[in-house]
Length: 302
Image 1 (cartoon, rainbow, N blue to C red):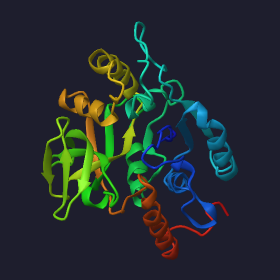
Image 2 (image 1 turned 90 degrees about the vertical axis):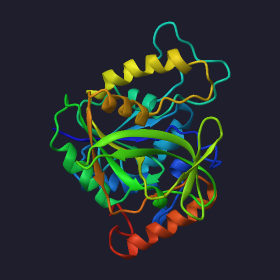
Image 3 (image 1 turned 60 degrees about the vertical axis):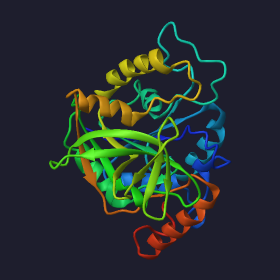
Image 4 (image 1 turned 135 degrees about the vertical axis):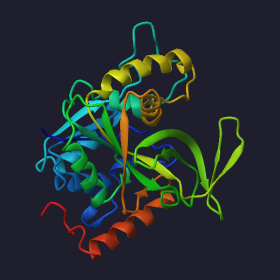
């Protein structure tokens, strides 16, 4: 059975100020998604599905087609605000962006039929993260409710330039996920980190917490849960123009209800991400260092 890499690339990128998914960060103008696809191919993945918006389709497809479409089959699906809405629901007139990561994955339900990984287009996860995830997915069936998440240490994922969103994880002694809570405003502090809750109150974090960077190993069995969860989300929060249907929240509910198990895969890799324009220099330097160490070639595709 094959393995599919699902790349979430429909994010607006409002804090960054541009289409960060196609920003050059490596030698010869390589973009972050190229390194993810390169790592996925050498970890046994045989197909890529990119989730994008229609308004970025031309630019995004032009970049992808010129770089790695000849290396691996690539398909595209669109995350649109009215996509997958149950009968009787409508998009609020003041909503400006799609419904979130779980909604983006749900958009793949008609095209993904094998175990699959989910990643963000603008996050750099590292070779060994893909190796662990590829190995896990090679041992599960398409109908299994056995999932995985690659866990990173919080302090290794924060920006010096503003707040970030992270799923903070509770991991049992057996290595399985017991719960995950999405925190949408986490900031670095001198002692570690802190997050603001929905009421605006701040809470202290150590920085050693395991967090989800939206790198998941899933199976098509999840799509039915996503459809049910999206309806419940819309019933509760569909009128809120800023509410998002988060993938970690769905997974957390499945784990809490005993309907799925999630193995937390540790990784020694450092995570790089571009949330703010100032973050790009950190990513460029990190990739330059890895190229110098021989982890990646100067020219990815020969």
